[in-house]
Length: 168
Image (cartoon, rainbow, N blue to C red):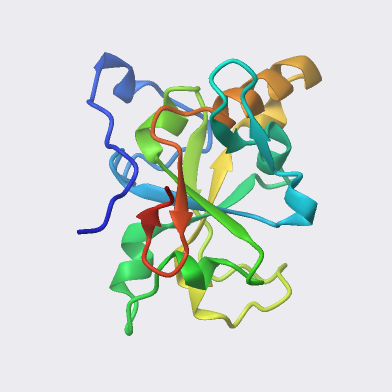
């Protein structure tokens, strides 16, 4: 059985209007974020709990948002794709988390299928490309705080790229 990030329970905040959000993307959809290894700089250890988590720097935004990949669309591809297809190098680290947790931070999620501004735009992984939106509208202090919250989402899991299972 594949272990995926937990699904959040819907609450009354699910109906909030978040700029740049596509309400047709279900809250229980799982997003994958590729963290380039970069000598391990995108993974930190919480000093109190000693648990590993992505660093907030792993959620820096480009002009259009934070690139992610929707698990549901990867699985719909023929043949189906998984977290290993999101990575560009064997050293890349893949994390997974759900859309509802992203929206709980007043951020949006929207599709950005087949982007042209990437190194390898023809790779099949881009059939599932999406963006987390809203960080660019925040001031520097609020943006950094929100990036830290993104890195610590309740559903955040490190994934084994070959199986999509949570890493132990």
